Length: 143
Image (cartoon, rainbow, N blue to C red):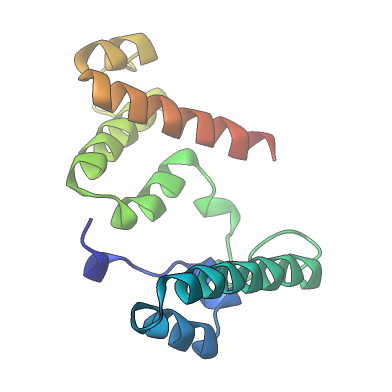
């Protein structure tokens, strides 16, 4: 993905600071040792700000997302992730969305596609990506 195509997430906005962005912009003009030290400082600062953000929001929910009961399905999560994916990943997300929509009875009368059927039609690289996303969804479901 081209660096110019990267998008900020709600978490980036919640913990972001224009001073940190200024430091990031200055990195290419520093010596390598300075870049390394400053990069560690920037990431440490972001980690501290992330921990503070979740301490201030005791319920663990990101208030910037303002999730409601109508937008908490795996399909909704996939749709939220899709803009950050590259073209091939977006195609895989489309397949997963169709799979999950079928499992929920939202497709046009066809039975749901099993995970095994889906994996059998994917190339090995996409199978690996799918398994990674599936693991991520399972982890999020346990939280």
